[in-house]
Picture (cartoon, each protein chain N blue to C red):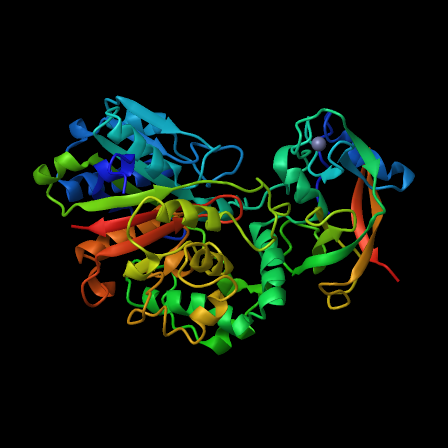
Length: 131
Length: 396
Ligand SMILES: [Zn+2]
């Protein structure tokens, strides 16, 4: 479901993080601030001491849609897209999907946890219901 | 108010629009020239008077077929224009063609600037290319789209549907309320012989239509077209020499104060529309209550709700109630919207079409869909997500 990202020096840690089952994002030790997408410095203090750090991988569904349009041949619809509010910090979010979950089985406010789908050298972080 | 602001030196001297249609037999450059000729004639200018061209986003022929097929260079060569100043660029707000034209005219870089937006998305789609849907090829994705496409969020319909779902959750807005944006556009389009969709549309039709990305249905999404729209921005000193009634650019703004992102902004349901509202009203003594009608961006119906709030026509979280029942935003209401049918029913002219319509209405030249009564002040807005531009247009 979807193309793979082009890996570069900034994003490679994020897209390969799932290899050991962990979701990682950049964290600034000075500001105690998580930032996403990754950048060359902390957007609070401009310090370069930001580093990839594992998150719990849990969060809450902040927004949800069911895509029903087969945008390209072979795309299986419908499927659920979500914006997950990650537990670590208010406003730290990830747009993602919940493959294999029936439309109607998830709503805003539901608790979810990360799961990964490997696509060549990339691990795409999807989400599933936290039961 | 600071009368030195660039836009206060500027007027819209002419407007033009090619045929707007689904698969036209004319290419993007031909459509653009059609619109330019009409705008020149409208203004009473000749091509020798034109010394500037401004466009957004610039030619993107290969990246997104049909989305922006015409380069400024194509137009300059085809029409033998002698340009003192020209500019186009993708890393700019959607309204930047007009905003930059104001800067150029006020600073003396040019006196008469053509601003154009041309699309041939309908023809591209007919060839099997979905120009507004990215990442459907096999190539790898870099840049900001990597945060959407690998997850299956291919289309702006899904990105906006996500935010719409959150908005409905927070504020209790309903599909019946959102429908009024589409129904209002359609009822106006029925009066406009140039609109794409002119059949009556009922609330039942809307509710029964195919869902695209919940909660957005078919009628919440605008319609791709082939067509070109041109406005000419001139120095206000030129007004006495023009054939047209001048329309003043009272204020224009295209800021981004928040995150350049669709999901990391401080509040998920506040788009840059709010930034544009703040800056727009800081550049004029007029207030939202003074506005006679508004051409608010409706690339998706939901975006219009955020524009109503962002521009201060209603309080935060109250846009759905504001449009409920449709009376307030109808042709005879307190704030008529989408008076030509919007992009939802008149076609995705991608922002510039609203300028064309607002100018025609302000001059009293909108013909079969002219609003009743005196209309002196109009708001035009462009964009969604991290793109937002707004302008306030004023008749003498
Ligand atoms: Zn920091």
